[in-house]
Image (cartoon, rainbow, N blue to C red; front, side, top):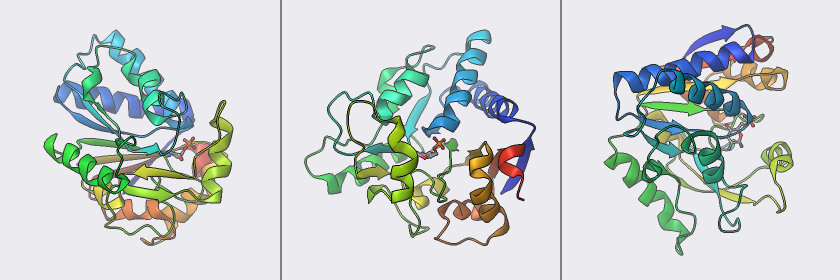
Length: 240
Ligand code: GLP
């Protein structure tokens, strides 16, 4: 995993947004793995602006959400699907049929994971995977203890995740469970950007950079991937 440190969050986000644009220019039908969360807001905002300036054709791009909550009201603005529409698919010439999110309305929740994995395989796998990191080292919603070869599945959220994300919920409580792609699923992406900005991420970033691969800090799994990058601003990097 190569570590790149930028002066601030704006420069780190610009770098990742530019890499997304380059990926799509190289290959119009790219498949992106798309994370959600506050870190991603600035990245998607810059990506949309840059793509507009460049008249980028994104109609053939496919995007796979990293995770989705279980048990939200239908059409909830708190879903990750709503987030990805708001920040990406409501803009540019994206094809709505090309946004994939785990099908949390399936009656048999045990089948959600295998269906999603099939969708990813049928799309030819993920070319560029974007990830944020939780304060406890989670990637997607692979909480501490997740196996390195885990696949898309239903997971219970930890107290740490509940605490940091509950402020984002409007008009409904935060669910206790979600579906996340697995660490094994993530490691099959051809290129991965793990992004952390701001001083609150400094401690966990230090544990990722200085620790060996271990399931207590799920993001360390990316150290075994030959084309993965940890993108930081100076605040997130200040303990390494
Ligand atoms: C959330 C999301 C993750 C995200 C992470 C960091 O729980 N499910 O995909 O990467 O936590 O979020 P933020 O960027 O808001 O700190």
